Length: 267
Length: 246
Image 1 (cartoon, each protein chain N blue to C red):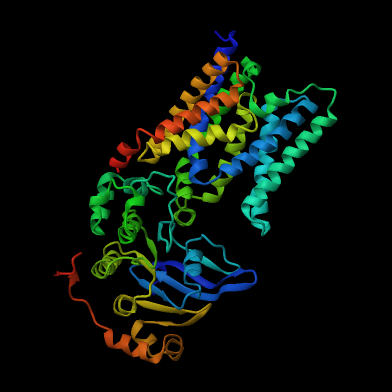
Image 2 (image 1 turned 90 degrees about the horizontal axis):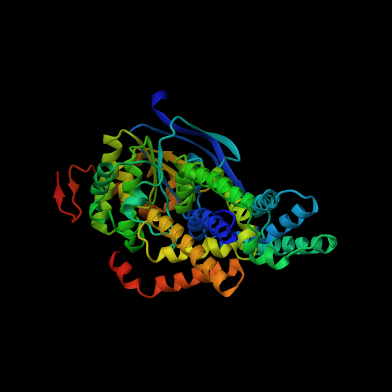
């Protein structure tokens, strides 16, 4: 069954969607979409380094994205530069460094399009293993810190006052974001990962009346986006990452039109 | 006061945030069953002091010694992002695992039990404030910190909530640190008043503080007379609609 590249892509994609579902909700709630972008742009540098030193791509991306994330957290405390400027600075400089390094590594052939937008053919059994194992670890940790990170998302001061240790859970959450980018970069691509975090969660928002409901719907929408996106990618011979995102967008638009009235009635 | 009753004690505590001290030289303690009120003009460091006690802000000098970790907080401002669907029942449970009886009992006490399944975003300012108080008392904390808890609540509701706060301090035997602009309540029900203006201007029981020259300088002669005139003991309580009940 794993011999078929399409089946492999499907299993890998669903694994990613299960992780991006809950994390995407937190990204939306905490208004971190640009933060996610910054991490995924820096992921390209991680990929370049993985090729240069022939180490595992996911590991290298996790290290680079995680470092950028922690750098960002400490810079936010130290400089007076606004958060979004800081994010832009790190996003574009790490993307640029990644692209410059690719120039230096001319001996290795890069599929730049694949790195930026994901490659359905590139998913190996090893990748599936990394995605599901990494995904389970991320979900396990997220489950463990959920109460604390959720309280901190509702109100930081309240969480801090009532012993939820929000600073620690913020820190862990940041690393989990780097982790989800690391496991999904090959499949979805550096430029589109944030889309898979945001769009299913945004779709779920208009249909949900409680946080748990939104997390579940976001995960299901993500899985549906992956399945529809990959099927159409196969059918129309389009790149896998963009196809999944387009499928997600279509679901988002559908969620706005017919259900708006009924969800308003539900309170 | 008995040492064992002390819930939290500040000793010469201060917070420095470049380029100035937000508060400095703050020393006082909150004991079990005691209502301590912080009063003072805007920017006098009332919220900063509360945040030091709650361990949200670290002290730049001095220290905060707390003998409990069962603290509950009603912040002055709280904005919940619209992107998060959140019902009152979900909000009640964010820092604790309360069961439904505890939640409805507590909402009942603040008069908003009907809102259990309402979206937080659909509540009015006063309703939200009542939910905030209900959430804080539901956990039966040792120390309750209330930062202007009745803002946006209508007049009758204000009286009912202040009576509730008084009742809570008695029934739970918890300490309450209250930041309030309602001088009437402050002077009639508080055990200890601390008058802040970047530092402690004066402190003491309500009847002595209104005669303090520092207090009069900060709040004006007229105000102080009015307030001392208003001192009285409540021998009754009010329902939500303002009617008197016992």
